[in-house]
Image (cartoon, rainbow, N blue to C red; front, side, top):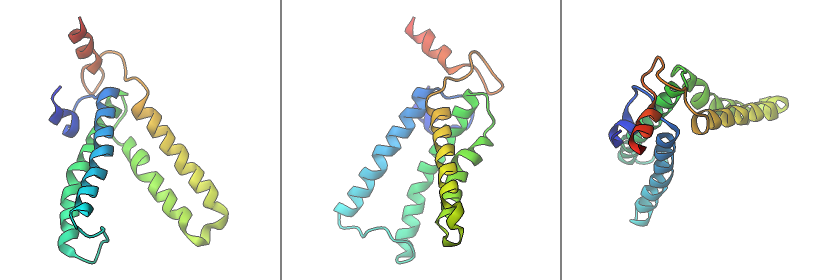
Length: 152
């Protein structure tokens, strides 16, 4: 499997190794790029001050976000799940945390944060640690068949 397909394809299935490759790559590359930006004299990123810098940051973030969505979709496909699960895994935790940060929800704040953490941990285990379905499924052939074939 080539790197462009691993990082940016929304089709087929991706095994855990591909998920961790993409996740660790962006986890390392994003801070390095940010450090390079600030070390070279670039201003700290604060939105709304410089519209050109805002546009440059958004344009740079688009491939990163597309890659994160793509690997999430293909990992879910490997688990024989629809990509609709990304709505729960990627969008619900920040929404719950935002709601929890509102001062008018004092009594529900802890519950919303715990729920957000539970969904995040569920997504972490589902995408990063559980093996995909054995053999072909609705989304394509088993990516581990390629690994088994190459190792023989």
